[in-house]
Image (cartoon, rainbow, N blue to C red):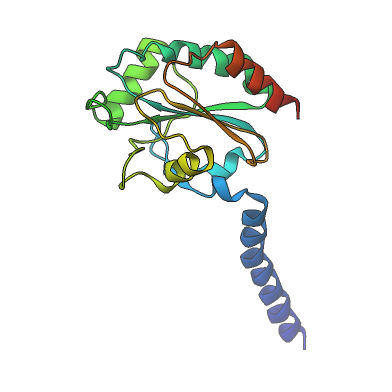
Length: 186
């Protein structure tokens, strides 16, 4: 009788561990249910880990006229990360082949040149038919597709609002910072 109880208890425990991940997935907004690989360390990087944060998504490139925005993005992240802002960089070679390097080269460039510590994913296609589904969804929701490097999407804490900003919008732009603070305040 005791061994039957132990088997039942073990089965109940096993069932609860199987069910929990599904319940956790329900708490993650559908928009964030995408997985990437971290540029910095090659580890899995599910976007669900940022649920409840304000997220600034930026497609980046190392050899672009807008590349100096890395500095402003890192400053913005350093200033507001403790309040709930996450800047997410998505290196892309989609525009003018301005991100030709390997992921290791990109990570080193960002760290050594701009001191980038905000999370970045591996190279990502952000436009056209081959675009990552996350970027396709952002484009559909905002009706704004990246036209060049450093296009930005700002996502509120519960991922119900997304605002798009062009490459010309600098990280310290008054309207962008105002919207970030609005999203952080909610």
